[in-house]
Image (cartoon, rainbow, N blue to C red):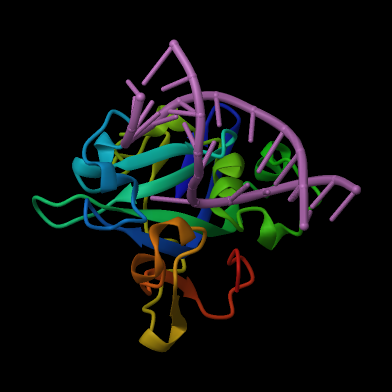
Amino acid sequence: MLRQSDDGLVAGRIVETEAYGGAEDRASHARAGLTARTAPMFGAPGHAYVYLVYGMHECLNVVAHPPGAAGAVLLRALEPQTGLELMRRRRARPHDAAERICAGPARLCQALAVDRRFSGHDLTVVDELWLSPPPDDRKLDAEDVAVGRRIGVGYSGDEWASRPWRFWLRGNRSVSRP
DNA sequence: ATAGGGATTCTC
DNA sequence: AGAATCCCTATT
């Protein structure tokens, strides 16, 4: 994930994600159907869906779903790679260890200066915010990826809250909750 | 028009 | 453990 702004370039490797589905997924913002806020979740894959949560934190998703469906992948953590100083300056807690700067969906958005203006943004185009394989990209084995229940979605009931739709790199220090 | 509540983070 | 804090969504 890369972010270019007037202040400079920052980038990090995605190390933790969560999947959110369409109308059937009681934990997903798409459960209410297409609304102004969630419209990107029903749109073209590869675009961003950014929302405000708890009245103060932004979270970034990559829209991803089969044809005719809705859904997105929440980016929960990055391992910082480029622009550490700039990331730190943007964070509420500049004191954090480097590997913790983007350890959480809202922290990540702070460090990358991503807000709702990016909702609907095409992440496949190299401009202000885009996706690209990291320089040191290597194939992952299944055993490198840990799987578990999604975080913070207890309101959706056991069936949906317990779906194993959270994925993270096993042992990675930048994961929000290892 | 209004009320309930949240895909979190930070501090105590 | 508790607060911060705004806007979305559903209901009246």
